[in-house]
Image 1 (cartoon, rainbow over the protein chains, first blue to last red):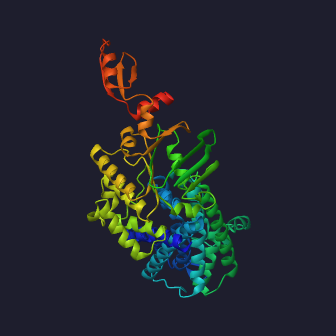
Image 2 (spheres, chains in turn yellow, red; image 1 turned 120 degrees about the vertical axis):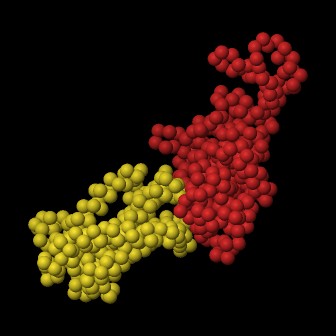
Image 3 (cartoon, each protein chain N blue to C red; image 1 turned 90 degrees about the horizontal axis):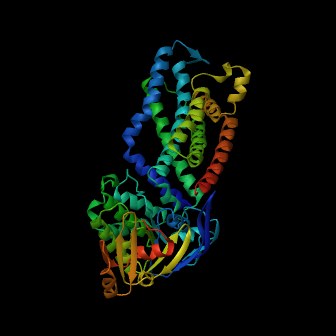
Length: 246
Length: 278
């Protein structure tokens, strides 16, 4: 299994190396725009939970970007399946479905971590430095990436075309990005909305990452929920890869 | 060797393969000939693990493709119909990833890649991105990739489709060379001359059924050796003869134009199915 997983991951790393600078630039664009638009516009004038809005925004952007970058492998798999037909090369190889999913999930996690480092770098430029040097900050980043790259593999196997993929992104990822606690604290929303948003993995990721960044606080409950959700999506992804044969 | 027993495949309302059986011996070049949609690619997809079978059994070098899937996959190399190289990677990287997928140790992998690039005459292109290669070069790289892990069975699904005559002949020579090394080759094609030139045995596939399996010579001999095509206003009639003299004798009575030629596999396929291969 390690051989198969290593091969899949190796391919993704080769592609990542080839696109590295382009990818780094594209990873920086959205967070930079958010920081310029919200950070400079509201900046130090607006305080949220005792922190400036820019300070509040950075951990939210970390959660949101780790989600979008980890989930981004869905489009890559989709292209390799429907356009380049490279997925057939993996299907014909003597590797099992677990190895394939694990290789792709690791690739998603890698992309996610690179994007988080980009955001933290941008944060330094904007004069924000929080509690990043603790495992409690990086653990929810890892679990959030695990959740969304596993979801990405499963979805990429279920969709039948590129347009289906775009539609899924619009229905799942975009609403979550705006409602998962990235831009505002969800405890300011009505109780009903809070209950609904409780079921979004990004809500827990934002909460855990923000808690660690502000107070070096370990949010075990959110981490446990993320781990369970990730495990569930991972097993669904394995099932979907098997079903993608026909 | 390849053994298929009563293999069937059903996609919802389409019965793509209808209980087919065949065997190909070690080192044999077996061609699978039929029109588009006959079930050629479906057979290869099932044998190489890309598609699940509906019923029946298939074995690659004795390994059951359903119960010993990973061992069966190790036995074979696949050159699919569509180019499926990673366009963003170089020739060497494409082969390297394949070697990793088949668990080849790093040193063996590196040596074999260089050896195979030399074999397919593309050793000077190892650092070229595959998107910058011509169609014929990409096909040869795909053949090299399929051979990298030293498979004992090679599946070639329409390996020369869309290539010009010169490149096609280069690939035929390469396929012959691979077979001479003892590799079993299972080739699908709808090019008559390709099957005739390469195959030791041919199976005719029509609407998911194998209608005949034999050597190209025996399949053609059922009809005779010579054929005359007569074109009328809305149809073409073909007659078959044992000898050229017999054919020439008959042609003296024809008023309109005709063509005298040797019988080919297309004739054999047409006589069995009432259809042309193309």
